[in-house]
Length: 50
Image 1: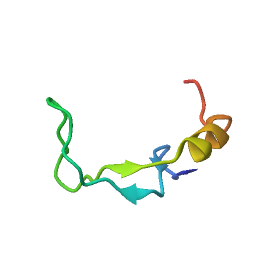
Image 2 (image 1 turned 135 degrees about the vertical axis):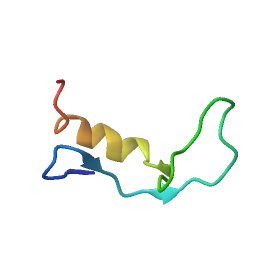
Image 3 (image 1 turned 120 degrees about the vertical axis):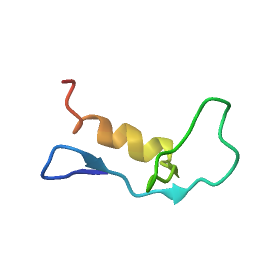
């Protein structure tokens, strides 16, 4: 997980292609990825609150 120049974040993960929960949709060009818990917990300190 890293921050892009425009302030957005990029996440490296495995593509999740199982059925999405009801009401969840992806926009054009979007893919759902799975980030393991350890990676997200480690990245938390680098994600600003605001």
